[in-house]
Every structure is written in structure tokens, then in C-alpha cells.
Length: 332
Ligand code: NAD
Ligand code: TDX
Image (cartoon, rainbow, N blue to C red; front, side, top):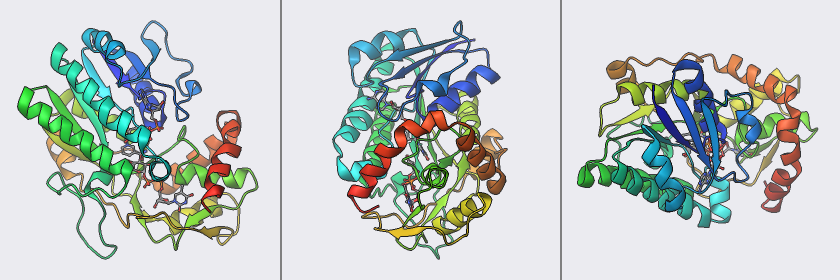
């Protein structure tokens, strides 16, 4: 039994991992979260207070970070500015949190000799052509496109340098696009679901031919726990569940599942520098650590996600007007 510090645990994927840890292990959890616009305390409701604590603070603040890292047996670092479109409007908080914040945590785990797992994304590899049979592997060179993905790439490289130069005990994982309940409604899938629930037409960037490799957030959590328990120190693991789908197909599926005509959406201005395709070869994690995804039926995962947003309006409705106003300013 140990104490795990989860940064960004009030966000979408971090909160899923906190629930997963408390349900599947005896560990106790401290969440360190700045409670930015992307956090929601309601995502952490109902947890056993004898095993769970939420600390509000900035990962870039050494005075906050040090005592928490000192008392932890492991740190799992999810906290980030996570949305590409926001990084195009203002990269400043991305530099602060993704780079300075990660640096601050690395200095603390170096000092207190704490096990560290770093959460990252497949976007660090850039994009693939639509007709290229290749997928990203642990050996793919870094080639990020956006301010978001470049700061995530920079944070991964800091971790690699701290492993090699200072011998910190760390692992890294790069996961593909997550979906599921509790995802902020600025992101593609929940934005379209909540648009339909609000009587707004869904918005597709450009032609919608860009491909994303979808994985359910609960499968991401089980993969991270597997790496934390069995991963080889110093190594990187890619996490994916063979969920490639283009955006227009995903949108038409959502419309059909919600009883709407499949053409009831608007094409809007494309994202500048929009990555074409992401695809993960996750065979190393499966073969070496024996991990398998459980939520592999994308359509039924989407159905459950739609049901969750329909039943939990109080979680997202207060955010909707502001999110849409921000998008409409840039024609999206
Ligand atoms: P999210 O935006 O939903 O949550 C991020 C959380 O981090 C929020 O609770 C926020 O308050 C917190 N945070 C932000 N800045 C902070 C700071 N300075 N100090 C402390 N807390 C801070 O993000 P998400 O989608 O849950 O992503 C979590 C992690 O997973 C990120 O590192 C992201 O890069 C990575 N990732 C996400 C995806 C995806 O599809 N969403 C895929 C692969 C990897
Ligand atoms: O309204 C929209 N319409 C649209 O067509 C939005 C919000 C998005 N899109 C497109 C852009 C992308 O091709 O949908 C796709 C998915 O967009 P996002 O949800 O913004 O995700 P993406 O940019 O692919 O990044 C996500 O996956 C990797 C996460 O936000 C990152 O944190 C993660 O690292």
C-alpha cells in the first residue's frame, strides 16, 4: 500500500485514473490540481476521504510541490494545458504548465528520489499521411506541430534528460485521443454531443478527413497503472487501442446515435496547422506488460458517453455558452 500523488487529477483523464486507483488498489491518493477552467471538483465526488485528498495548487510552485513529492511513494503527472485550439490563441499557459511545471516536478522527484510516471500524447510525433500504412512506435522521432504538442514534446525530453543525467526512476507513456464521460466540452466528441443536446448544429473543421486514434479513458487508466506496477524504469510505452476513425465518420455516428440526420452539421474554418492523422502501434505494451484494452467497441463507447452527457447536464451546462462564444470568435 502506498501514497500516490496525481497531478491534474481534477481534469478529464486524471480524475478517471484517481477513480481507477481507488477502485483497483489499496493505495491512497493526493491530487494536486490548480483547478483551472478545465478542472471540475464534481468529477471527484463520492471518494473515500480516508484515502483521498485534493490539494489546490500549481505544479510550477516548488513550495507547494516539494512536501507533496516528499511524502509520496510515486508521482503520476497528468496536469497540463491540454487543448490545441487554446494553444493557438495563447501559448503562454502552455509554456508555464507543460514546461516549467514539469521541470519543477522533476527537480522535486530528483531531490526526494520519488518514482515518477509522465503522461504524454502521441501528438509529440507530429502527423502521418492518410494513405501511409505506418503507425507511431516508441522509436518514431519527435516532430510536434502546435504550441500544445511542442510543449508536451519538450516536457518528455526533459524527463528523458533527467533519467539519463540524474538517474531519476521514471517511465513515460504517450497515449492516443481519449474519449468518455467527464471530458471538457471544448474537445471534439463532447462538444458535438452537447451541441446537439443544446439545439446547436455540430461543427466540423474543414472536410473532416483528419484521422484520430480513439481510446476510452478507462483503458488509458488501466494502461498507466500497468506501467506504474510493471514498467521498466527509463522506458517509454505507447498506449493505443487500434481506434482509427476520421472526424466526419465520428460525427455522423454521433448524429445517428442521437436520432439526427447524418448531414445535420456545419463545416467551419479549419484548425491552422491541423495534424492529418495519428495512429499508435501499442504492441510493446501488450507484449511486454500484458495489457489489453477492454472498451474496444467504439460505437457502444460513444453511446454510453452520449448517455452520460444527457444525464449529467449540471456538470457541463454552466460551461457551454462561454465555450461556444470563444469558438465563434474564430469562426469555429
Ligand atoms: P484536462 O485539460 O481535462 O485536465 C488538465 C488538468 O490539469 C485540469 O484539472 C487542470 O486544472 C490541471 N492543471 C492545469 N495546469 C495546472 C497547473 N499549473 N498546476 C496544477 N494543475 C494544473 O486534460 P486531459 O485531457 O485530462 O489530459 C490530461 C493529460 O493527458 C495531459 O498531460 C495531456 O497532455 C495528456 N493526454 C491527453 C489526451 C487526450 O485525448 N485528452 C491524450 C493523450 C495524453
Ligand atoms: O469542434 C471541433 N471540430 C472538429 O472538427 C473540435 C473541437 C475539433 N475538431 C477536430 C480537430 C481534430 O482533428 O476533431 C479532432 C479532435 O480534436 P480535439 O478534441 O481538439 O483533439 P486533438 O486536437 O486531436 O487533441 C487531443 O488528443 C491528443 C487532446 O485534446 C490532446 O490533449 C491529446 O494530447
